[in-house]
Image (cartoon, rainbow, N blue to C red; front, side, top):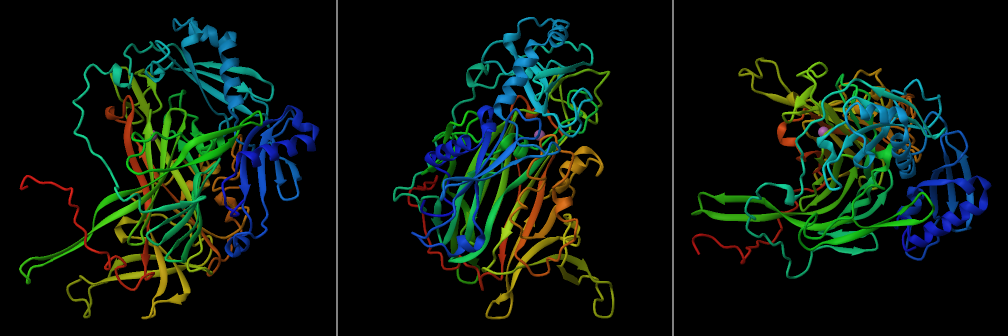
Length: 633
Ligand code: CO
């Protein structure tokens, strides 16, 4: 180990699993779910120098034959000991394992009631049936005993092995699987709806006619890329940051700094929820937490050079723990590269015969893409030359689908995306946790709203504005929502660090045009995904508070999330500050989303405010790309 935040190695996983297995007999039939780093205290990380001794603890989660929510073991790799082995509550259990997903598929296919329901729809060959297990928490079926692990399954039919099964939803059939008992407890059948006929294959060979190949674009950097990577430390244009993959959160950034000045200790996708808003029984219960229920990071893709990623790429791999204790190395799990980003700034002096000064912008991209069932989510972190930091989520993949049934489907809930199919309205809400370390000290949180001043003797034309800054001093005060009419932004400052003209050093959070949770606050997602009720939350740093919806969300009724975390209304007036930003999209599907949705974007920016004393890119050297050509050449 070279640094306390180094990614977990294959050897470390192997050792940790061996130590677990030899420590307790409960491990004899354990199914491992994931492994993650127990991050050392911030002080240790901050003061670490190469060669220092440093704690190295790994957290292993799994399930076994005990009737509870699973186990969590902390393994100390310095002393080669299992430090603790705790049971997880039945009310909020460890992430589903792939084994449970496969078990649900097998048990469902073998169930007579399920086979009978499919026979009514003319389906007798089970080999072409695709079964999609969904988390059973939130709205738990009465056939599932309280505290048991469970999944619900909906299904689709392929024409052949390479077909897109989502074109043929087996509408109205839902199987309930009790994973603890390892049996199907109930099969719902809401009545036969005719199987759709059209296929919706999205591979190139299946398109009747491909459009002409667009002209080639090459991104080349003949002098090599402008960034350096050592271990998991990335350096670029004054920025430094460490990247790794966490099994729940996907790509995580640590120790983000610019010109040696700390900004964030840690930033990651803390949780996400996708609640559906339809009465259609195939979807009405869905509100999945893709991060903590299925493991965003464990489902990260192995990216392909030239297809997923264009240009001069540096890839990082990620090691994941498999159910049987073996290691799955996801090759090329994180992609790092530079992109030209148009102009950074420009001015033409009209008085000086058109003297033109222009500088080009570019950005460093650190990204991963996770596929979770029918959906694909890209998580992109961007660093810019002017100190801007951006988080962007790219949503693509295949929407939830039913065969259109005029008796069931409402025009305002279930949107026609083809002659035979509808897709229900739903939301994708993401919560990013920002653990601040702005200029390496305690930070404060402000909200700014721009208001119009009343007409008065001092404001005779009614045009004067006022940007009102409010110091948010408690957790309750910091539960805030976007307001485009007042150009609302939130600002984090370090009051002890000021510019030469007295402004505190700060960073602004610029939210996008983002919704909050529309489901009722007392609904299952209102409780389980309380983070989605507000766009902003803030808390004083606490090591155990990393998950916006609670560390464990499987079969979870709603404890441990941001509602609980902030329930004692702690003081945040000047502290080791953590902000949580919820953003996303409300998705009313359209025909163009079928058969695969074109990428839709959401996210936010952080921009420096008084972090620099002037435009930090004013000293960029002019550059003119000599490979560029025009019709004037
Ligand atoms: Co969607």
